[in-house]
Amino acid sequence: MKNYIQGKQLGCWVAVNYVASYELNISDADADAYFMMTCYYDEESDAPVYVPLFQDQAEVKRAYAKQFIKYLKECQSKICLPVTKRPDIEYWGTDLQVIVIALEMEKELQKHLQELKSLASKNSETDLLKFLKKFLVKQKRNIKYLEYQHSYQKELERLAAEESTSEEPVEASGRGLTSEGKTASPPSL
Image 1: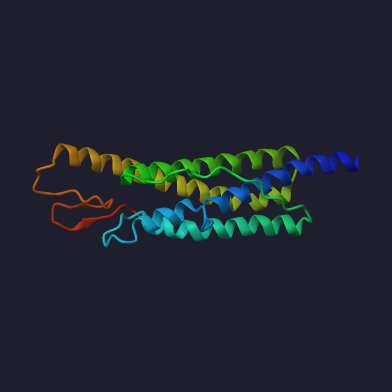
Image 2: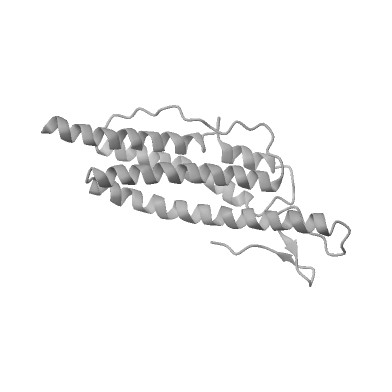
């Protein structure tokens, strides 16, 4: 019976290791997609409105990875972080392309978290389910924000194409100008 229980738990711990590795991979200074995205805009004085989110996510993802590793240690589980594929992008492209890359990364992480949740539920790992709950809520919020930014950037590109000679310019920073000439920003989450 003990081997059966250990076998069930092993699947969960392997999945936790994978999630920790993925979190580190998108936050680690060497391979950090979010870190690289923020560096891409460092030189611009009028960076897009989503850049602060990327700066925050670089730190948050690293902190989340540490929390997953700490959880493994507390459960006296083996820590063996697998190598995960990171975005292989040399040029980030347009604001819309950057948002698409970030959205794909967040959706991939959501998929891993959901798989871990399913495995924990199947194996009756109630402590792990409680631990995962906050990450899943925050992950949904991140995806929702990036989906909003994605539709907003698509609309900005469409307007820019339509009104390239218009009197009311649309800024490439992710913010548009209102009819009063003030900068409009998306709602904060």
